[in-house]
Amino acid sequence: MSDTIPDKSYFRIGEVSKILGVEPYVVRYWESEFKTVKPVRTRSDQRLYREKDVDELLTIRDLLYKEMFTIAGAKKRLAQMKRETSGQRDENYSRLVEIKKGLQEIRKILG
Image (cartoon, rainbow, N blue to C red):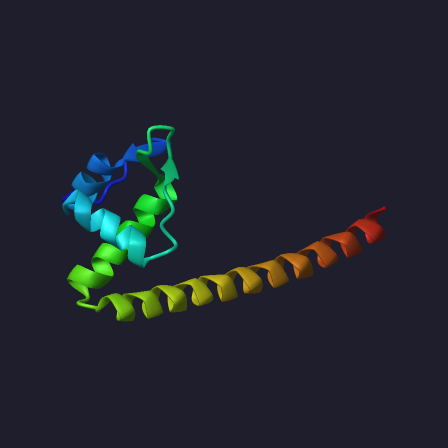
């Protein structure tokens, strides 16, 4: 069970299952339960997971296996984590707007 994600654009389900340390059918089940995991499908209908999908699956695995959440509990916790991240982004954006205004004022003084 390796938590490091190789530097690749896409991963096949076998690679993802090795990274997660679970069987491929578990990955497919989590994909059906957690709609945030959306692998790309090839013409031959193979799943190709992006790095963000693998990262999300690692979080799901940790919630289910390490923190012992149920599927429903893990869904709620993921939603909560997303809201917290979104709030942090809004806060960072507000700070950047303030910094920009300050820099524009300095530019007017100097210009």
